[in-house]
Length: 136
Image 1: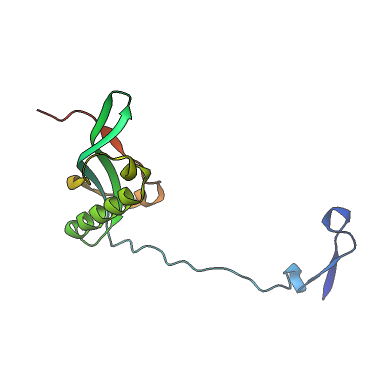
Image 2: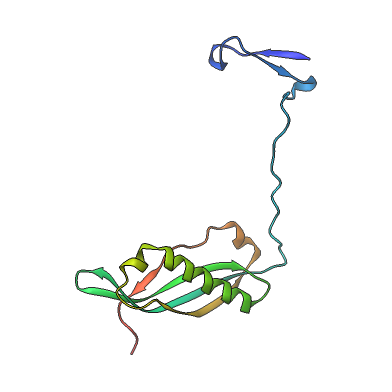
C-alpha cells in the first residue's frame, strides 16, 4: 500500500491511505436510481380552476386560473385524474387558498398533450396564471 502525503493546504501532515493503482481506501458509496420507464408516456395537461375570488390588485379580483401540469401515466384518463389531484393538493397547501374569498376552485381539464421522451429532461412549468374576466 502506498501513502499519499497531503501538503499544508490539504490538512497538514495527515496521511491518506491509497490502494494499489491510486484508488481510495474508502469504499465506493453510490446510489442506483431507477430510471423512469420510457414506455410510460409523459402528459402535459392544462388544468382550469374556476369559482375563486382572489384579490390580485386594489380593485381587481382573479376569478380563475390555469395551471400546466406534467405527469407520467399509462393512459390519458389516469393522467387527468393525477393532474386534478395534484392541482387540488397544491392549491389547498398554497397561500392563495387562504387569501381566496370565493369557493374552492372547480377544476377541469382544458387541454392534454403527450410529450416526447426528451421533455423528461426539461424542467416542468410551475405556478398559476390567473385571469380576472370571464368569457362572455
